Length: 170
Image (tube, rainbow, N blue to C red):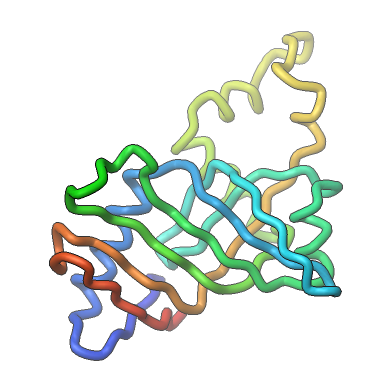
């Protein structure tokens, strides 16, 4: 199944291709969460994604953003290349939706993540006596971000300063 993007005046396939291009070109995202009192927190994570534009990332369940998601699942994610030169065409995404600890889709998340980040796959399938790069690695869990709406900036595809808000139909 592949999600459909809906934005007034824009072709869904063209928008989807643009979003996929931006996601493929970037491996790191910024994620904003909030707690029950409304205090916001931002963090970064390496991510992979599926054809429905759901993002998967590894995190420690005790991290602040993971604790926030356990109580308030809304989150926002920004994906962009921070090396884009000022004054040149830019591309990036702002995504808005919900995030949670991955349950049944854990194997799919692991396979997608391993395909994108071979070092993760190597660590996962290491010899039992091999040393891990971090004592935290075994405690990391997959989280899934399901976007419901997004904003696309792809100046190569849609022109200068064209920000396109779209809804995502799963």
